[in-house]
Image (cartoon, rainbow, N blue to C red; front, side, top):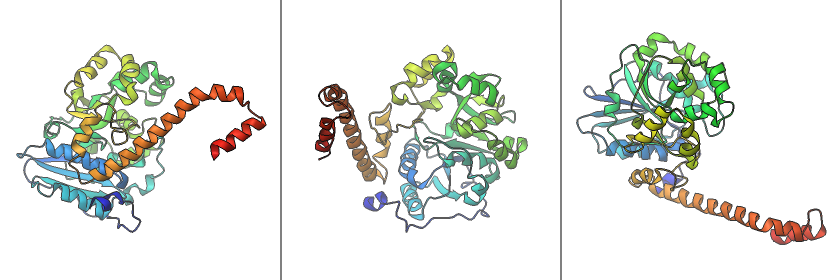
Length: 367
């Protein structure tokens, strides 16, 4: 089984295209805890790990209605995930293909490690028209508390969503990123930049969203700018002054590359900085927001916590194999850099550039 899982990119695998005409309704009649995720085929091992953390910290009294928006997840991957949750009668996982809905908007701006999938959550109020509320979670996180507690946060009609303030963005705004202040002030035009929230964990008031914006308005608004943080910026604009701010422990971003705390959050206002540091002591949700993920490097901040849950997933052999390759490549790159730093001054002295000796050395090293 594990060998087949590692080869999940096989071109012969069949894409499961959920009929858009099928309406999604709550999976359980009682205690239905609705959870929304966005994922791609390549991210299924990481989604599986996140899912395992939800299972581990769930409560038998609650029923967990898990919905995954996607455009390319295969039937094989769906089967693997459904097998992972099969023995839990209070767990339902459904995959919903949004290809036809997103087709007119596939040109939305993306860059770096961001992918078009991040925009799919903007469709939640309109696809999930039989739901009044749902918890959205990114897939690059680990849940260490019962998510039902998150879902049960009371949202009155004045709030479009509940989220956590973002100490990281506050530090970027206060000088770590040179052009951030100008962008926030002139493009986002937020009245209070320090109220900016991190969108990896959100409790959506779907009814309030539907009563405030049409899907057409939201998607047309989304194409107006090259948003630096894509739909996170969009949601911050749309929900301004209508956000219920949660305990930051519900979205604790890891210390990316060991600079987030010391160099970025250090620049944030004292109250946000202190709230973030307090949340790290007992994080309900750990968010690996950044390009250096725990499945690539086990030694990242809170990396061991991620692997604690990964070990129980059907993808574990594949994850270990990929980690070994990443470790090997990282060691090679580090060794190359070290050798270059140590030897380059000697090479330049004894084998000057644009000389025959230099060319002979190149050929020798090549061999």
